[in-house]
Amino acid sequence: MIVVATEDFKVYHGVVTELRDRGVSFTTIEPGDEWPERTRVAVVAAGDAVEVPDGVEVVRAESDRPRQAVESAISTLRGGDGRTVIGIDPGERPGIAVLHGEMVVAAFQVPAAEAGEIVRREVEDAVDPVVRIGDGARLVGARIIDDIQSVPVELVDETGTTPYLGSGARGMGDVLAAVNIARLDGEEIESRPIEPTAGELTRIKDRSREASDTNRAIGEGLARRVAAGELTVEEALAEHGGTGSDDGEETDDGERPTDAESDDA
Image (cartoon, rainbow, N blue to C red; front, side):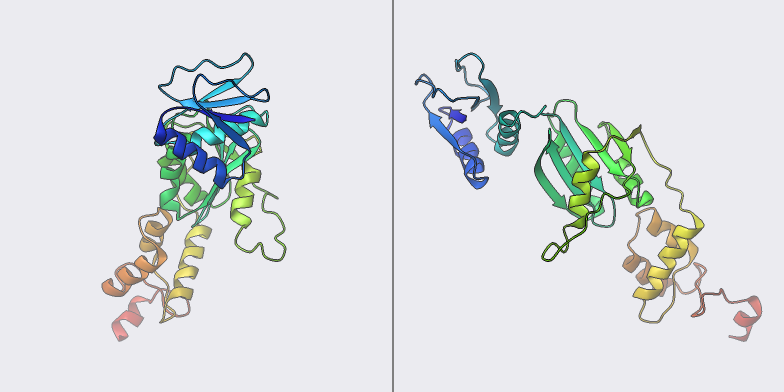
């Protein structure tokens, strides 16, 4: 059983609210009261001096971080090792899963530009955290890795990590893949090459053509900026429309105009 024992009202309110929201069984006592016989985890305020029975694990809660304390308490109660592991399925809107031991304690799906901030927040004060990121969507993954900083990162073979999605599960694939990625050992890395391949540039150009009202693709210069994360496809199309053909624009058949064609124009 989890027992909350603190006179700090902010800690008490935050922790109890989190426990109730998650449907976790718990009880509360005043510091100095007799502890219930089934107590396994005690949640107390960070500054409290509270004596607990032998064999009871203590989780200290900050008033502005009740969720982290509750996650630690639940993980301890279930016998997890408590290590924070974050799995990321990279893409334009990466799936992100946060595990304490074997238990999923949080999940997100956000624009790629926000992924680094979420990771930094979730590993703050964590002991021995690790980030495991899938090896797909290489350019997006490289940007996320560069943005994380100071957290060990493992590159994971994400083959087969996206599960079959049955009825009603649409949109959950990236998050579920992130959970599976978090549970796989990977190769520790510090960065990934971000230079786009010719095939990646071609795919970006194709995406821009599909998004264009005039069926015209952006040129290589803008495609490289999209690949580097400096622009979205939509922003590149807007810039392309305002600059004419100085970025090497392509014609409707995908070919660059020749000098003769340009002169005839």
